[in-house]
Amino acid sequence: MDVRQPHSVNAAECPSRAVLEHVTSRWGVLVLALLLDEESLRFSELRRTISGISEKMLAQTLQTLERDGFVHRAAQAVIPPRVDYSLTDLGREAAAHVWQLARWVERRLPEVQEGQERYDRARAAAAR
Image 1 (cartoon, rainbow, N blue to C red):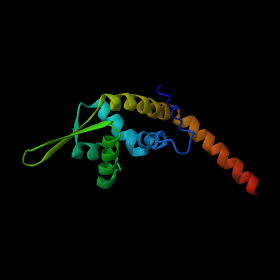
Image 2 (image 1 turned 180 degrees about the vertical axis):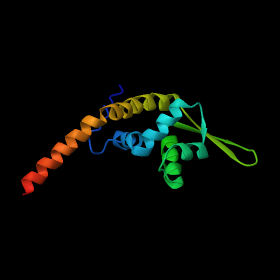
Image 3 (image 1 turned 120 degrees about the vertical axis):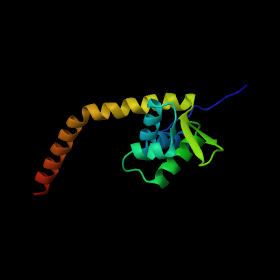
Image 4 (image 1 turned 90 degrees about the vertical axis):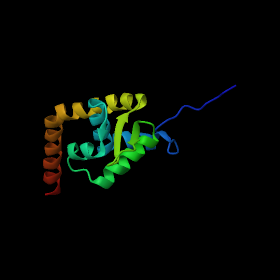
């Protein structure tokens, strides 16, 4: 009999926490979302499109997402070397979810900013 404990991100030792961090990190969301819109992209195309990401951070993010099974890395033996990145089926599913959240944040940003301003005003008034 296979008795498995369900995974819970609320449990400190659950490995799902690390995966959640990978897909919801600033760069993870942007890489997944960009690859969702494109069939495959080269490293330089990803770097050019994701404003503000360093080469090191992009490389680390791609490696992490590849290790988690979300991104497929296809190295081609040509001169100059060519490496293409695309989403796996699991990656497409994850990307759809995080991209939906990112779009929601974009739509609701004015309300979030209003809440931040209210909070800041209240804190400043309480400090006087």
